[in-house]
Image 1 (cartoon, rainbow, N blue to C red):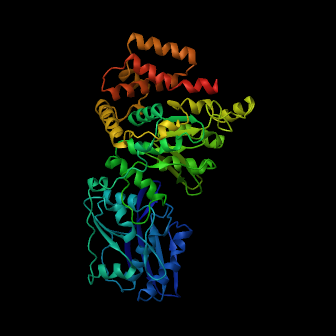
Image 2 (image 1 turned 90 degrees about the horizontal axis):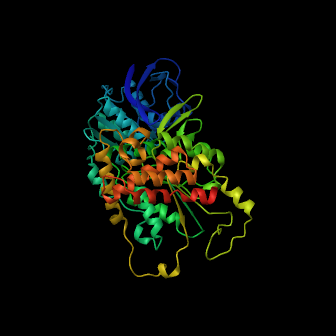
Image 3 (image 1 turned 180 degrees about the vertical axis):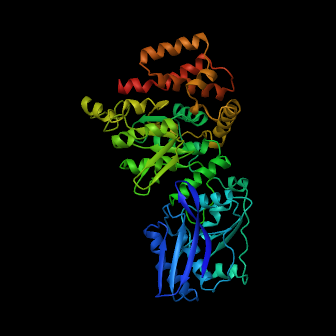
Length: 510
């Protein structure tokens, strides 16, 4: 007896259709899975057998062959447990024979028949919808993750028996009520509010400029000056994720297994802060299965590298390509995948190993050679890709105890949103949405300078030894400063402030 069900696999951030065929024939009892399964799929034989028996059904006597087509694509993960079990029950006539070729089923089975959530449910469901599949049966723990997809029917199930009773028509599972994106946005929360930051007027201004234009940022300062807290404020002043950005971001977190069970669509921009001991593979992506790294998990959000010089040199140099291209290509012998990595890089560091070089309160105990070796851990090409470089000093005690409240994230975000709206309107025909994405051609078109501004910028390039890349990044920051003012043309003051954000390069590294 031959039965067919439908599952989906993962290839990078995309799902692909897998036809699950189960054939029951005479002979000794055996269960063989073919179609290029990995170890976790092969192990489904034991999980499925125990789940069927402990759910009150009978494992058929005979030889069972399970084929996962197409046979030339690697099948990974336990998501095929449920379609395999349903195919076996149909082949043995314990489940009414029916056409499940248009019903996506996925889920991991425990030995007692309970359904556990699986990673990658969202990209699988999105791919299924694109193929015209509208009926989805999956674990209840994955249901909130796909509740944002419209025009489909999602049936959350707790166990194998619950799915069988639903398909036989004895106890139909109520379809989940899908939510709109506006419903998700209502639950968005700010992790760290700007009102909690005392003092640091210059750093707050730089943070607002970074949020408005999307450039990369480096903060240098003594320990305890608030660099980490400032960085954690950034997601709260960035514009809300659009629905398309939320889907892209959630898909990456879903295939990585980073979504908490029962969580829905991500509506706040991600903030990833890997430890400085992170390897190249964990930062960029890789491993035997070519999984996404921290730079992809921060897509549409912020990648924060605290203690920048403590990261390994190969890991930092590997960031250069994603910062330019916005994508990461991970290639292994058996796996190749491309992950999106459109990020804002925010880094912080001390000015020396002891942390107090240039401090007004404590004396530095490092020698000149120690300071030089410490700073040289950050290469020139990486610094060249950082648009805004600021110094963060310790906050005086008088400012810490001041009673006047600082601006909140909501107030700053309102100005940032207006600046971003101007950029989106300006670039709506160019395929980009913020100043940080301008290339050389578009910079020439949208970042025109008058004679006085051009003279100031040329003088700064000669005096500070800027590269052509740094020259272009100064233009982008100046364009952002004009947008924050609501001006159409870049003025001399915008160029002067943008140049000021590149001064630390010369102070510490030259």
